[in-house]
Image 1: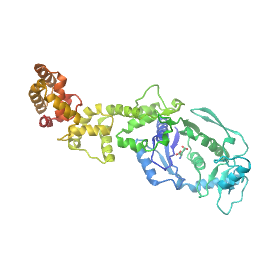
Image 2: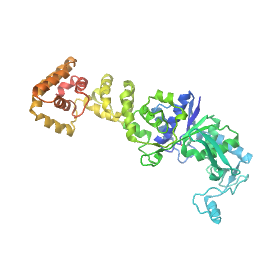
Image 3: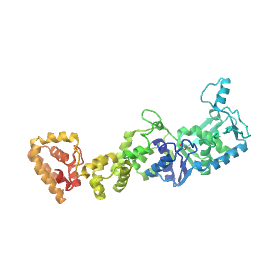
Image 4: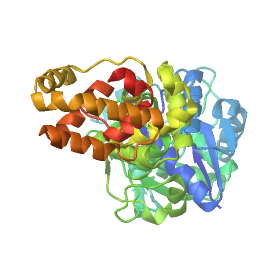
Length: 461
Ligand code: GLU
């Protein structure tokens, strides 16, 4: 039974990269029958905003990722401060009054000209609380290797020379990420820390804190990074990879979960999973070492597959949420749940998203439809073809009769023989019916279309 956490900083919308961390933690919690803790890391009071916490909660709920405990770091400053004081007392932390300029100045004298500089330990051992502006830094101690085991990458070794005496407590009287995260992960009894590989250096720093405070060190699993097709880090490309973007696009949450789960995890060559399957198969030994590549076309493909297999009531629920989100309403016959279910069953085969489904369904749901320019051109072409013209009246009658009686059994054969009698291809006759019935040049099979339109078919023919 794992205890894991998702710990986003509410400084922006939930994007695919951090949602991936959420998905992996959630799946692992579910797989082991454990708990997921949602912890809002809002120690940076200037950059954190409540609206982002709300949107993260909304996105998690939409994706069906529940959590068992919820914390906000801004409610826990006293806890962090108490641990900071303890480290000061232990001599493992010290007060520091150096400014960035002080450090640059000292470094210049030593011939170091880098702009980004590691702290040089100047204030080490300073136990007296300064009057003015100051921070509290951790004393890393002697140079040594910090070694930890990572589930994905095996043994990781980081030398303290690569780190510096990092800040625990900032000048604005708030804790840093690296400090608060250790206190919380320990007090909240996390068994596994599953997060992006970009945190490996942070993990090394955090291990020092675990050791100083005598906290047991959890297991770590650092996930490979997610890159865009052009090899840039995904998190850098904002907007189009926010979870909100997919919801508005009409992506099913199950499909998004499925797609995201494959970014750094695999189960053979399988691509399509239901949520229960993901939960069943999700083990950490299946995490990938190599970086994942985000491919929107593939995501749409995964969505199309889920559109075809999802239960109709679940599809209806997502469709309702999609319309609400997009600020659009069901139109015409779409408001009838029974009609919607029939229409969705037929039309989902050819629509890759809820947005596409909505647009497509409108043509069947409303009494009026707009004919596409393509359909108009084709209609003119077919209308001037003598054989098609000749077959049409009887075809129309047959279609109207079938929809009036509700018996569609012989309709296709009837249309085939009418086409044959007039010496035209069946496909051409069907194309004419299709355009008149739907205003489009493509549709599901013509019998399904007539069946779906019911009495409305006669008005259109
Ligand atoms: N708040 C951190 C982030 O969003 C959490 C990192 C972690 O999982 O420890 O990157």
